Every structure is written in structure tokens, then in C-alpha cells.
Length: 264
Image (cartoon, rainbow, N blue to C red):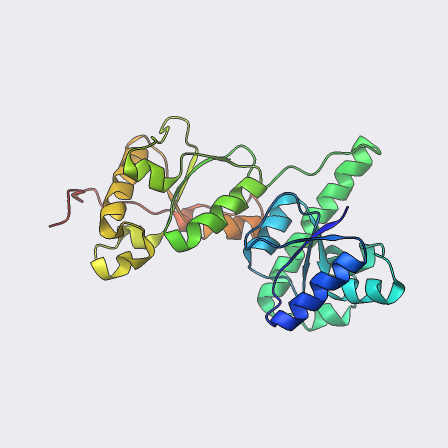
């Protein structure tokens, strides 16, 4: 069964029509807010910086333009996806009208989709009919996320979709329920607001500034262990640009003299 995650559809009526069309054609709809690995397809009006689209890209799911659904509805059955895939639309030789109308962000994402799909297909040819997927983009990473609440779920799901292993959740570490395995951690991604001492910027951290202070203690431990922490945007940028992306411009450090004591 094909299971579709829909993203980038603003109007509720359009969304309802899409869900009804998928179900009438024998497919299933992923109705939850975030991404789930059970989905087989992600359908969108354009390449987007949404959780579902990015996770679908990282996980090697089939990413299709929304016209796939309407053309399938006209045909009375789910069509072959190949000509509707963003990987096909965005290939260098494509003269698609959809491609021509993309904005710069969508074009960069589309290029990443094309590269990811091409790598998968190449592996399938090498391995034969039982081919394996291309190497997941975050495979081999053991990650500690030191990011604010508004980003944590999305980045956690994105890293998992791309093959990363996750350390304990920051909320559990800060509450003392779990500990971060400093020695096992290979990557730490940080929200720049973690380093901001202005209490007015603590609104996106559950527990407010107390949580940020605890998170800075974890960051200090990671730094002292020799780990180079990176700003959170490296995750998406690496997914789009590839593993050769330089880390230098993303490095972030706590000031050496900072006192991580309790707030006054």
C-alpha cells in the first residue's frame, strides 16, 4: 500500500480533497502533524523546507508533485510515479514548466532530490534487483541536540530519517532523568539562542532560562571533551549541499570565561 504524507497545502478544502482522492484510489494518508517512516511517498506543490519534505528526502522516500494525484484521479488508479517525481522534474535536462516556475530555494532543494534519487538508482543497478538504498546522509552520526523547543522535534525526526543515532532528549538530560553520553557523541547541534544571556529570548525553551543554563553545561562538557559544536542550520544545509559542506562557518562555542551558574 502506498502511504502518502502531504505537505505545503495551505487550504483545508484542498487538503480534504487530496486525502479523499488518495483513499478512493486505494492509498493511505499519513494524518499526523510530523513525519513518520511508514510513509512511502511525500506529495507537495513544490520542494519545501518542511519537516515532511526534508525527512522524506533524507529517508529516500518517493517525492512527487501534487499533479500526480490529480492525474491519477482522472485515470481512476494510482499511476506510475516516475514522470511526476521531483527527481525527474528537476533533472538537468528537464524542460518542465513546473521546474521553470520554482523559486531559488525550491530549485536548490530539487537539485538535492535529484542527486539523492540518482544515487539510489545507481545503487539498485549495482546491487541488482534487490538493491539497497543509497547511504543515508546522517549515517554514522551520534547526535546531541541542544536546540530550542520550536526546532527540536523537527530536527530530531530529520536526523533519524537520515540514519543518525540520537542521544538522550535535551529535556530529559536537563531534568536529570537521563544523561548525555559525552564520549559516544560525535555531533552536537546548537541553537544560537542558547548562548544568548538575555532572558527575553528564553521563550522558545521549556523551563525558560533554567533549561538554557543546564543545556549550556552540557555544551561545556562536550567542548571540554574536544567536540566541535555546530549551529543547527548545518543539518538542513548538509542535506541539501552534501557531505562535503565545510563545517568551519557553522562552528559555535561558549565563551571560555562564561559562568554557568544559577540565574539570579
